[in-house]
Image (cartoon, rainbow, N blue to C red; front, side, top):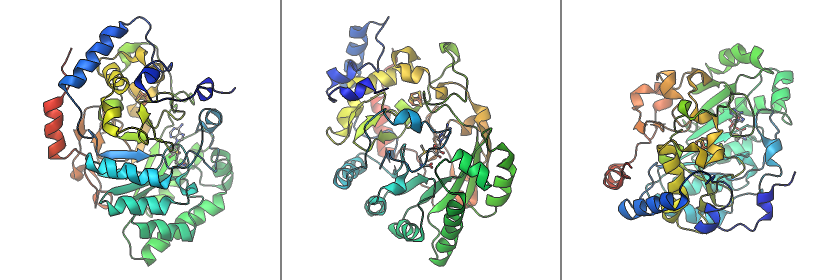
Length: 397
Ligand SMILES: C[S@@+](CC[C@H](N)C(=O)[O-])C[C@H]1O[C@@H](n2cnc3c(N)ncnc32)[C@H](O)[C@@H]1O
Ligand code: SF4
């Protein structure tokens, strides 16, 4: 089925974005809500990034078709590509001025497919930013590994979902167990050889029916070798999978915290979306390669999304309304040695940083294991940002 949205000439004009089918205006007073958010913009202008992390989807291409990842739904879901180096650099210059401290160079695809990844990391490091990528490690050859270490990557999180050839290859379809295993072990050797403590290496595991028998083996094998490991249950990836129950009842839902407090998410073509769960850009908020970031954060669509989450009017954004991140999911985290936080707190944290998005609370480095906390940049906004946000917080209606 060809996605109808792709046939439409995309515009990033607010009138277009407010009418592009991602908002359900049914049963609400549209004029009243728009007047409210316009007034909010007049009373509480946004002048800084609220969260000091920006995520750049360097590419949405992937060399795997993992069974829990909705690549099948993505094929015809949006246009595919690799982020332009020049546009990326201009954007980094812009977000640094707005208080960015950390850049995540991964979105829905495999970042090592971008041949300029090392250059993108080096550019961010040159601007004083902490850098992080998430990868399946299948393309992490010695040459690429040397390149990313020398570029100064701070953190690498690997997805590794089988401890035997048959389990790994039945989950991470298209990849070769022996190649990936050898890449990861060689990477550890290389990091030692180069005498580098960076990047910090974390390996994550998802418990799936296809690999659950390997879970203990995963922990025993990797825990002594790697800086941190985590074991999770899978999520629904927005509308992409159905591992967790969906609910119509608004009463059980709470904001995921991302629209208000989360990192800024920029897709490979510059489109700004609420978060990484929106893998097909169902909710486009603007384009960071065509408009100033502050204009996007301040405009009606983004303000409507924040209002919907703040006031639990989730029906306004059907994509958010069906998302499992609104439902309590303390049981999703099975094991971590990254920190000592209680699970109900840990699941409110974005995976890449030290921030409780739901309650808008930074964590303390003392909550993290010593090996992992070393060199972490706490993701709480700097004092200038905190002061600006306090002054400009939206009024309660
Ligand atoms: C979309 S991938 C992109 C990065 C890279 N290609 C990789 O595989 O690590 C980002 C992360 O989402 C994870 N993921 C995919 N489907 C998931 C699901 N249904 N539940 C939880 N995590 C999932 C992947 O394993 C990976 O760790
Ligand atoms: S509700 Fe889901 S789709 Fe919406 S912003 Fe939160 S995590 Fe993203």
